[in-house]
Image (cartoon, rainbow, N blue to C red; front, side, top):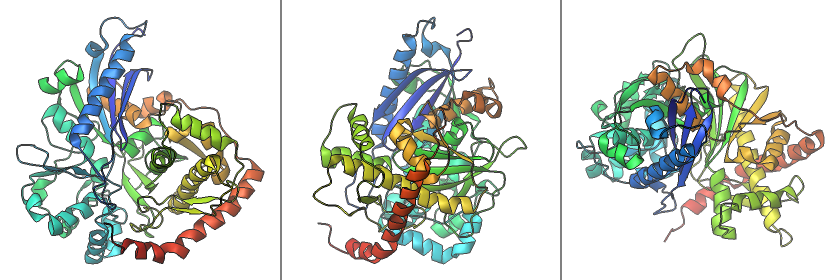
Length: 517
């Protein structure tokens, strides 16, 4: 390790925050992570405490520094080698700030379903096709535009006290630098931004009913936006004055961290939700409204895609976590590994058990906040192994359902890069290959959004070219090929899966009308 300059990448996820320390050639020398809860004061709510984000970030950063300090090749303190910090974070969420930059309420995050009526009302006000043309896709509950509209109706005094409305990772940026701002990739996930012009869209902002000066100013994701303040530096265990780079939303940062700067492969990230993304050379939206066209973390150029097309399911790792915590009450760092080992012994189709993973409503392709989770075919003969296998299969089938809409509006992929927690599981890799019928390569680092944040940090510090380095930094495992027999089984299972939602959608709406107390 001759050049000991380091980049720090922070990924503020939904269930945890990750920190990576990376050398300029992409070698990971330190990593840390810390979990925090999703607060659900009501069944349709999903909120988080921004102080829990910061406490987790501090812990994750210090763990990464401690691991780097133990490396035999490291001379001196790793914190003194950090030349820039880059950020990535969960999309669509809403953090309300006072004029003094105080956080006024818990953050409303993307799985939140309270604003379904507001999303529908905004869509009707603007017109569905006009909305897609302006915003790059339809508006869903949990998007910042719908949440702000809900606040206008239900919490007007809180909104009156609000001076700035920012995304989750930009709340962390503020804590680090004292500066309020954002960049196109996170802004394009709010529902108030034009991916085509890469600016706030006045027509959308006016429809939401928010004053334009409450929205943060824009820079590019690769821009240095401030330096680490003394108070933040002391808590993080870092020197003050380190440049902080704007960074990006977690999905496009993950696309960069997976080495995908041009069309060809599909990135499937199995984290709290399931995200599917393909790079795009133009900002043309999917006119059917079944996917979204958003800004990438790289400005458009002949060398890189300035946009990406995205579809998502709301419950991926969240569903497995629900099974771990609420059903099995498993504890310990190996809980997920044990669960997936059980699933490995169950044949495809989970012995007739099919899981619809709508634990928090659903995004693509249904855009339905009322959708609910279902275990279809459950019998007394099913045990823990079948439950785990069916949940993993249901998550994957949900991703495939979303991907069908995505690839109809984009170049069909020839392979899949699998990332996130699910990407590390051999069982899950094979299920994805068999359901999609495509070769799958998993991203060995497993933290592609934090890796993308490191690339953006390096670009902002002027020490690397992210387009050149992205492919070299992405370490991909050996390809897992689909098995024809298992493919045939999953085609049959998928037909059962996809018939479940239309049969039950009216019942989902009836359930929503029942009292919650």
